[in-house]
Image (cartoon, rainbow, N blue to C red; front, side, top):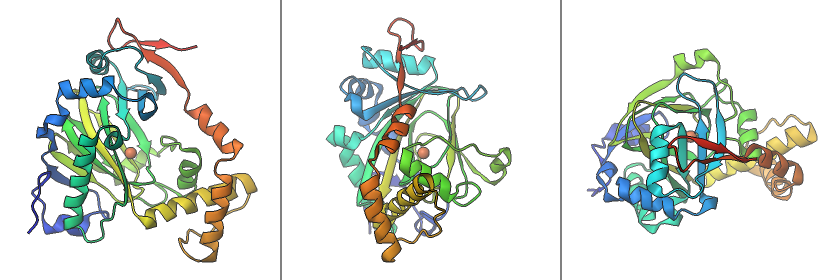
Length: 308
Ligand SMILES: [Fe+2]
Protein backbone atom coordinates (compact mmCIF):
# COMPACT_ATOMS: atom_id res chain seq x y z
CA UNK A 1 0.00 0.00 0.00
CA UNK A 2 1.36 3.40 -1.00
CA UNK A 3 0.96 6.45 1.15
CA UNK A 4 0.61 9.65 -0.88
CA UNK A 5 0.64 13.27 0.20
CA UNK A 6 0.56 14.94 -3.25
CA UNK A 7 -1.28 12.69 -5.68
CA UNK A 8 -4.97 11.92 -5.23
CA UNK A 9 -7.45 9.62 -6.92
CA UNK A 10 -4.86 7.61 -8.82
CA UNK A 11 -6.14 4.39 -10.38
CA UNK A 12 -4.67 1.53 -12.35
CA UNK A 13 -5.56 3.13 -15.70
CA UNK A 14 -3.23 6.04 -14.82
CA UNK A 15 -0.39 3.61 -14.14
CA UNK A 16 -0.90 1.96 -17.50
CA UNK A 17 -1.33 5.18 -19.50
CA UNK A 18 1.47 7.24 -17.92
CA UNK A 19 3.91 8.41 -20.59
CA UNK A 20 1.88 6.77 -23.35
CA UNK A 21 -1.19 9.00 -23.57
CA UNK A 22 -1.91 12.51 -22.30
CA UNK A 23 -3.56 12.06 -18.89
CA UNK A 24 -5.03 14.38 -16.29
CA UNK A 25 -4.67 13.46 -12.62
CA UNK A 26 -5.61 14.94 -9.27
CA UNK A 27 -3.11 16.40 -6.78
CA UNK A 28 -3.22 18.38 -3.55
CA UNK A 29 -0.35 20.81 -4.04
CA UNK A 30 -2.69 23.75 -4.60
CA UNK A 31 -3.41 23.55 -0.85
CA UNK A 32 0.26 23.74 0.09
CA UNK A 33 1.36 26.87 2.02
CA UNK A 34 4.38 27.04 -0.32
CA UNK A 35 2.27 28.63 -3.07
CA UNK A 36 0.52 31.50 -1.32
CA UNK A 37 0.79 34.96 -2.87
CA UNK A 38 2.96 36.02 0.05
CA UNK A 39 5.39 33.10 -0.34
CA UNK A 40 5.62 33.62 -4.10
CA UNK A 41 6.28 37.35 -3.72
CA UNK A 42 9.17 36.70 -1.32
CA UNK A 43 10.51 33.95 -3.59
CA UNK A 44 10.51 36.31 -6.60
CA UNK A 45 12.40 38.96 -4.63
CA UNK A 46 15.35 36.75 -3.86
CA UNK A 47 15.32 34.78 -7.12
CA UNK A 48 18.77 34.64 -8.77
CA UNK A 49 18.79 36.47 -12.12
CA UNK A 50 20.32 33.55 -13.97
CA UNK A 51 17.49 31.24 -12.93
CA UNK A 52 14.41 33.12 -14.04
CA UNK A 53 12.97 34.00 -17.45
CA UNK A 54 10.42 36.73 -17.96
CA UNK A 55 8.63 36.51 -21.28
CA UNK A 56 6.25 39.01 -22.84
CA UNK A 57 3.83 36.94 -24.87
CA UNK A 58 0.85 37.60 -27.10
CA UNK A 59 -2.74 37.64 -25.99
CA UNK A 60 -4.93 34.69 -26.90
CA UNK A 61 -6.38 36.63 -29.85
CA UNK A 62 -3.46 38.86 -30.79
CA UNK A 63 -0.35 38.65 -32.92
CA UNK A 64 2.54 36.42 -32.01
CA UNK A 65 4.90 38.08 -29.52
CA UNK A 66 7.78 36.44 -27.63
CA UNK A 67 10.26 38.79 -25.95
CA UNK A 68 12.54 38.18 -23.00
CA UNK A 69 12.89 40.74 -20.24
CA UNK A 70 13.80 41.28 -16.61
CA UNK A 71 11.93 42.34 -13.49
CA UNK A 72 14.31 45.19 -12.67
CA UNK A 73 14.02 46.70 -9.18
CA UNK A 74 10.39 45.79 -8.55
CA UNK A 75 9.26 44.15 -5.31
CA UNK A 76 7.67 40.72 -5.48
CA UNK A 77 4.22 42.27 -5.01
CA UNK A 78 4.86 44.71 -7.86
CA UNK A 79 5.94 41.85 -10.12
CA UNK A 80 2.74 39.98 -9.31
CA UNK A 81 0.71 43.14 -10.06
CA UNK A 82 2.52 43.52 -13.38
CA UNK A 83 1.70 39.92 -14.28
CA UNK A 84 -1.95 40.43 -13.31
CA UNK A 85 -2.16 43.51 -15.57
CA UNK A 86 0.01 42.44 -18.50
CA UNK A 87 0.84 39.57 -20.81
CA UNK A 88 3.75 37.88 -19.09
CA UNK A 89 5.14 34.51 -18.19
CA UNK A 90 7.54 34.49 -15.26
CA UNK A 91 9.37 31.18 -15.17
CA UNK A 92 11.21 30.58 -11.90
CA UNK A 93 13.46 27.88 -13.30
CA UNK A 94 15.35 25.36 -11.19
CA UNK A 95 13.21 26.20 -8.17
CA UNK A 96 14.09 22.81 -6.66
CA UNK A 97 17.71 23.99 -6.42
CA UNK A 98 17.03 27.61 -5.55
CA UNK A 99 14.79 26.70 -2.59
CA UNK A 100 15.07 23.28 -0.93
CA UNK A 101 11.42 23.34 0.17
CA UNK A 102 10.32 23.05 -3.47
CA UNK A 103 13.03 20.47 -4.05
CA UNK A 104 11.41 18.35 -1.34
CA UNK A 105 8.06 18.66 -3.14
CA UNK A 106 9.67 17.46 -6.37
CA UNK A 107 11.32 14.50 -4.62
CA UNK A 108 8.06 13.49 -2.95
CA UNK A 109 6.10 13.80 -6.20
CA UNK A 110 8.60 11.67 -8.12
CA UNK A 111 8.62 9.07 -5.32
CA UNK A 112 4.82 8.86 -5.40
CA UNK A 113 4.71 8.46 -9.18
CA UNK A 114 7.56 5.96 -9.09
CA UNK A 115 5.57 3.83 -6.65
CA UNK A 116 2.69 3.69 -9.12
CA UNK A 117 4.37 3.54 -12.54
CA UNK A 118 6.93 0.73 -12.90
CA UNK A 119 8.73 2.30 -15.88
CA UNK A 120 8.86 5.81 -14.37
CA UNK A 121 12.48 6.86 -13.90
CA UNK A 122 13.47 10.44 -13.21
CA UNK A 123 17.16 10.27 -12.30
CA UNK A 124 17.57 13.72 -13.88
CA UNK A 125 14.80 16.10 -12.89
CA UNK A 126 13.99 19.71 -12.27
CA UNK A 127 11.06 21.93 -11.41
CA UNK A 128 9.98 25.46 -12.14
CA UNK A 129 7.18 27.72 -11.01
CA UNK A 130 5.34 29.52 -13.80
CA UNK A 131 3.38 32.63 -12.91
CA UNK A 132 1.45 33.99 -15.88
CA UNK A 133 -1.03 36.65 -16.92
CA UNK A 134 -4.70 36.28 -17.74
CA UNK A 135 -5.44 35.56 -21.40
CA UNK A 136 -1.86 35.09 -22.47
CA UNK A 137 -0.47 32.07 -24.25
CA UNK A 138 2.49 29.80 -24.72
CA UNK A 139 2.85 28.89 -28.37
CA UNK A 140 3.08 25.43 -29.83
CA UNK A 141 6.37 23.86 -28.78
CA UNK A 142 8.17 20.68 -27.83
CA UNK A 143 10.34 19.99 -24.78
CA UNK A 144 13.18 17.45 -25.01
CA UNK A 145 12.89 16.09 -21.47
CA UNK A 146 9.66 14.46 -20.30
CA UNK A 147 7.23 16.95 -18.79
CA UNK A 148 4.36 17.30 -16.41
CA UNK A 149 2.34 20.35 -15.54
CA UNK A 150 0.74 20.95 -12.14
CA UNK A 151 -1.95 23.57 -11.76
CA UNK A 152 -1.91 25.52 -8.48
CA UNK A 153 -3.86 28.74 -9.16
CA UNK A 154 -6.04 29.90 -12.05
CA UNK A 155 -7.46 28.34 -15.17
CA UNK A 156 -6.00 27.51 -18.55
CA UNK A 157 -6.60 25.36 -21.57
CA UNK A 158 -3.81 23.00 -22.58
CA UNK A 159 -3.62 21.40 -26.03
CA UNK A 160 -1.46 18.30 -26.39
CA UNK A 161 -0.61 16.91 -29.85
CA UNK A 162 0.68 13.49 -30.93
CA UNK A 163 4.44 13.00 -30.52
CA UNK A 164 4.89 11.93 -34.14
CA UNK A 165 5.40 13.57 -37.54
CA UNK A 166 3.97 15.82 -38.83
CA UNK A 167 3.30 17.30 -35.38
CA UNK A 168 6.98 17.00 -34.45
CA UNK A 169 9.75 15.80 -36.78
CA UNK A 170 13.31 14.60 -36.12
CA UNK A 171 14.51 17.91 -37.61
CA UNK A 172 12.47 19.80 -35.01
CA UNK A 173 14.06 17.79 -32.20
CA UNK A 174 17.53 18.46 -33.64
CA UNK A 175 17.00 22.23 -33.78
CA UNK A 176 15.75 22.29 -30.21
CA UNK A 177 18.67 20.19 -29.01
CA UNK A 178 21.23 22.32 -30.80
CA UNK A 179 19.93 25.83 -30.41
CA UNK A 180 17.92 25.57 -27.22
CA UNK A 181 14.92 27.02 -29.02
CA UNK A 182 11.67 26.02 -27.43
CA UNK A 183 9.10 27.99 -29.36
CA UNK A 184 10.05 27.67 -32.99
CA UNK A 185 7.63 25.35 -34.74
CA UNK A 186 4.77 26.74 -36.79
CA UNK A 187 1.84 24.34 -36.53
CA UNK A 188 -0.71 23.84 -39.29
CA UNK A 189 -4.20 25.01 -38.37
CA UNK A 190 -5.59 21.49 -38.78
CA UNK A 191 -3.23 20.14 -36.13
CA UNK A 192 -5.87 21.16 -33.57
CA UNK A 193 -8.22 18.50 -34.97
CA UNK A 194 -5.78 15.94 -33.55
CA UNK A 195 -5.07 17.57 -30.19
CA UNK A 196 -6.27 16.49 -26.79
CA UNK A 197 -7.62 19.68 -25.18
CA UNK A 198 -7.76 19.92 -21.41
CA UNK A 199 -9.52 22.54 -19.32
CA UNK A 200 -7.06 22.76 -16.50
CA UNK A 201 -7.78 23.96 -12.97
CA UNK A 202 -6.19 23.97 -9.51
CA UNK A 203 -5.74 20.45 -8.16
CA UNK A 204 -5.03 18.92 -11.58
CA UNK A 205 -1.82 17.52 -13.05
CA UNK A 206 -1.16 16.80 -16.72
CA UNK A 207 1.30 14.27 -18.07
CA UNK A 208 1.91 13.51 -21.74
CA UNK A 209 4.18 11.32 -23.88
CA UNK A 210 7.81 12.32 -24.40
CA UNK A 211 8.23 15.11 -27.01
CA UNK A 212 4.47 15.58 -27.48
CA UNK A 213 3.95 19.14 -28.78
CA UNK A 214 1.71 21.34 -26.66
CA UNK A 215 0.45 24.88 -26.30
CA UNK A 216 -1.31 26.74 -23.53
CA UNK A 217 -3.95 29.46 -23.37
CA UNK A 218 -4.68 31.11 -20.05
CA UNK A 219 -8.30 31.94 -19.30
CA UNK A 220 -9.33 35.10 -17.45
CA UNK A 221 -7.25 34.80 -14.27
CA UNK A 222 -3.62 34.82 -13.14
CA UNK A 223 -2.13 31.34 -13.27
CA UNK A 224 0.43 29.67 -11.03
CA UNK A 225 1.67 26.30 -12.22
CA UNK A 226 4.57 24.05 -11.38
CA UNK A 227 6.43 22.46 -14.26
CA UNK A 228 8.44 19.29 -13.85
CA UNK A 229 10.99 18.06 -16.40
CA UNK A 230 12.56 14.68 -16.01
CA UNK A 231 14.73 12.26 -17.87
CA UNK A 232 16.15 8.79 -17.52
CA UNK A 233 19.10 7.40 -19.44
CA UNK A 234 17.08 6.62 -22.55
CA UNK A 235 15.71 10.17 -22.74
CA UNK A 236 19.20 11.63 -22.25
CA UNK A 237 20.58 9.40 -25.02
CA UNK A 238 17.81 10.56 -27.35
CA UNK A 239 18.91 14.15 -26.72
CA UNK A 240 22.48 13.18 -27.58
CA UNK A 241 21.27 11.69 -30.89
CA UNK A 242 19.21 14.80 -31.67
CA UNK A 243 22.17 17.08 -31.02
CA UNK A 244 24.55 14.93 -33.08
CA UNK A 245 22.11 14.57 -35.97
CA UNK A 246 21.53 18.32 -35.85
CA UNK A 247 25.26 18.92 -36.18
CA UNK A 248 25.44 16.51 -39.09
CA UNK A 249 22.53 18.21 -40.82
CA UNK A 250 23.33 21.88 -40.14
CA UNK A 251 27.10 21.80 -40.04
CA UNK A 252 28.04 18.94 -42.34
CA UNK A 253 25.15 19.04 -44.84
CA UNK A 254 24.48 15.36 -44.19
CA UNK A 255 21.05 13.72 -43.87
CA UNK A 256 21.15 11.65 -40.68
CA UNK A 257 19.02 8.53 -40.93
CA UNK A 258 19.52 6.71 -37.64
CA UNK A 259 18.06 7.66 -34.28
CA UNK A 260 19.51 4.57 -32.57
CA UNK A 261 20.54 5.05 -28.94
CA UNK A 262 23.02 2.18 -28.91
CA UNK A 263 25.76 0.72 -31.11
CA UNK A 264 28.75 2.21 -32.89
CA UNK A 265 26.83 4.93 -34.68
CA UNK A 266 25.36 6.14 -31.37
CA UNK A 267 28.69 6.29 -29.54
CA UNK A 268 30.40 8.00 -32.46
CA UNK A 269 27.67 10.63 -32.40
CA UNK A 270 27.93 10.94 -28.63
CA UNK A 271 31.63 11.73 -28.92
CA UNK A 272 31.18 14.09 -31.86
CA UNK A 273 28.41 16.14 -30.29
CA UNK A 274 30.40 16.44 -27.08
CA UNK A 275 33.31 17.93 -29.03
CA UNK A 276 31.23 20.22 -31.27
CA UNK A 277 28.22 21.23 -29.18
CA UNK A 278 29.91 24.25 -27.65
CA UNK A 279 31.25 25.51 -30.96
CA UNK A 280 30.98 29.23 -31.74
CA UNK A 281 28.31 28.77 -34.43
CA UNK A 282 25.94 27.15 -31.93
CA UNK A 283 26.62 29.78 -29.28
CA UNK A 284 26.02 32.64 -31.68
CA UNK A 285 22.59 31.41 -32.72
CA UNK A 286 21.63 30.84 -29.11
CA UNK A 287 22.65 34.31 -27.99
CA UNK A 288 20.76 36.04 -30.76
CA UNK A 289 17.61 34.21 -29.83
CA UNK A 290 17.81 34.85 -26.10
CA UNK A 291 18.43 38.61 -25.89
CA UNK A 292 16.72 40.46 -23.04
CA UNK A 293 15.11 43.59 -24.47
CA UNK A 294 12.73 44.97 -21.85
CA UNK A 295 12.21 45.41 -18.13
CA UNK A 296 9.06 45.86 -16.10
CA UNK A 297 8.00 49.43 -15.35
CA UNK A 298 7.87 50.18 -11.61
CA UNK A 299 5.15 52.85 -11.91
CA UNK A 300 2.46 51.33 -14.12
CA UNK A 301 1.70 47.62 -13.58
CA UNK A 302 1.90 45.72 -16.86
CA UNK A 303 3.84 48.42 -18.71
CA UNK A 304 7.31 47.65 -20.00
CA UNK A 305 10.40 49.73 -20.64
CA UNK A 306 12.30 48.87 -23.82
CA UNK A 307 16.02 48.36 -23.29
CA UNK A 308 18.36 49.82 -25.86
FE1 LIG B 1 6.41 22.89 -22.55
